[in-house]
Length: 306
Image 1 (cartoon, rainbow, N blue to C red):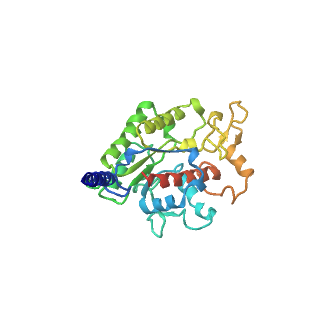
Image 2: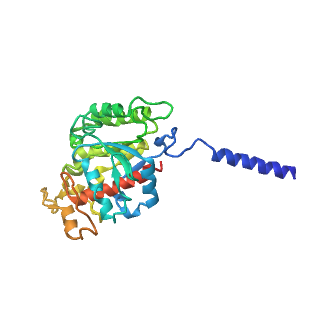
Image 3: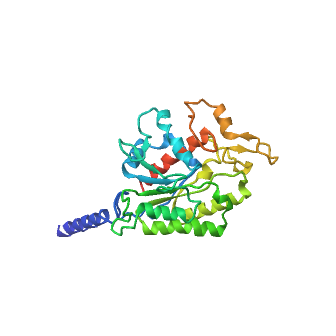
């Protein structure tokens, strides 16, 4: 009987030790988000597949700062009418301060000179902007001392990736991002690829985007694959090999000239207000903004679980 008692006691102690390990929720100060990676791409654009609970958790847990210029505005401009399109329940709302049960999504100053201005094509400005916004790292929390509530940093590109080399991509983007992650270990830094430029699968843009993708896969990073999202229509048809550009124009007959537009084709064959919604989408079409918004909510819903 004593042997049975001690066996049960030992098992309970083991269970308690295992259930009381160092793992914590996303909000906790010693969480290191690098333990898991996340790739958000064209397979992440089914808005109906994202549970309400995950979205509510993201709105409760995340405080996001997003630096971008015009192409990057496709994400937030696509997000703006989404709640109305989805029934106006307030589930998909966001704001710069996160009040009234909205997602806290602070957008930078764009082309100005305020917080998080411009985009990550401006090196070393974007790194300095990030450090100035977050403040000195707090070793006790893993966050910044200026805005300790912020736990997600996003930067998008304009067209600069097209002229990057393998070396400058490494030294002006990948390594600085990793250094920021090391200095602010509780802040999730979202990597991005750059928008399509019409040079197809053989172009430098695609090669540099592939460099970013592979780095994120190899190192368990969080990637919002901007280029991949606009390489496919909602039915899964692929256009990068047809010289697709950021406006969704593509070469339909393989003669080297872009002659039609996949987003406009899809919009014309589907019902506005039911299958897609009108939104502002800089340099592109509404459908592209829709897909970017869907993928953004997938991103937020899932990084809140890391």
